Length: 466
Image (cartoon, rainbow, N blue to C red; front, side):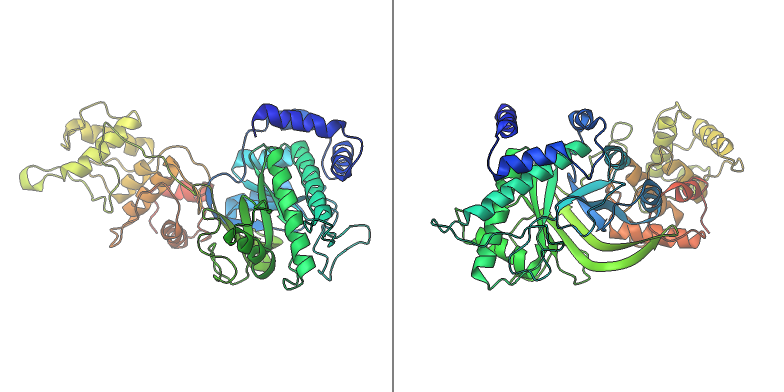
């Protein structure tokens, strides 16, 4: 749907005075009890960060939204880049969310967090734990004359409108994925299953009409199997979600599960898996009870290619000590070019990048040594390589991070020692890089958490090797 069409739809919904969808929309827009009302419209207009966007990596979700101090600590110390929060739904276990405000959302997005906004409203009619409070409705299991479960579809559409209203008040940008939490239920109960499917169809249709992406969280053996069967059977009466969030507590940090629940071709690059249920985790001395998740959405984590000094190769598995010499004793030209290029990029060397470890190159190298509190010497060793390779800005990087800073970390890790299996400078923090970071942190006496934050950056920049 085009932007003008979506605008017209919103205006139409806002003027409706009857019907379940209009009532739900108007209630959500007028109350918004879970979000801070101040400057909400301005926040929504300015929101530009689509979440979760393109990402492969770890996430967590919890009942109550953590406060800012907790989020800051976990950003610096935990492996997570994504956080699930409950923004809407009368059947949530945590209806009160005092920390979930537009300011909280904008702060996390600015810091690089991916937010997974969750709605837990009406549940399957055969789910024995709902209604949770008595005033929260369940999905209506009546087929109706057309056998299309029209009332359930309207419930799903109404819940989607409420969720969008809450998301907009929080400043969650259009194009972001809003997730519906459908707890596990008895799949063999036909009316229960078909009404739940109709409800999610109404949810997905309405979410998309209002400019967002539809996501559905459910157990592998019930809600996800139900959706994948509908996809596989090409059911024309069902609107499928854009992304799925599979609850499968198998302890495997990936997005796969058994084929009898979810076929391999279903929602490729559009999956999240909750692979570990509720448990306490402590990072940086702060403990939260969480579920663990693994995400692979959009294009995943992809780094943009980079070039240096007109095409000089920078990434190597070995960065040898360079000592002045001539003839057969001269340092390898390719590695000297790396030194010259990097010193040039740092504004220290203004000569030719010709691979000759000449007097001008040595003076520039000694200038770098002096500037970074090393003993000044014509010899360029591994500690010097580390400090130069890692030079630049120091953002927090961990599993799933991408970009030039990641490549600098990867190259510096190679410079620490001569690696039999070098770390590929892909610009993406993967499991190999994470393991190398942890090993380095342990070696120099830091907490081995795999996160390159301030203390690890400083150690690399100082050329610490033990």
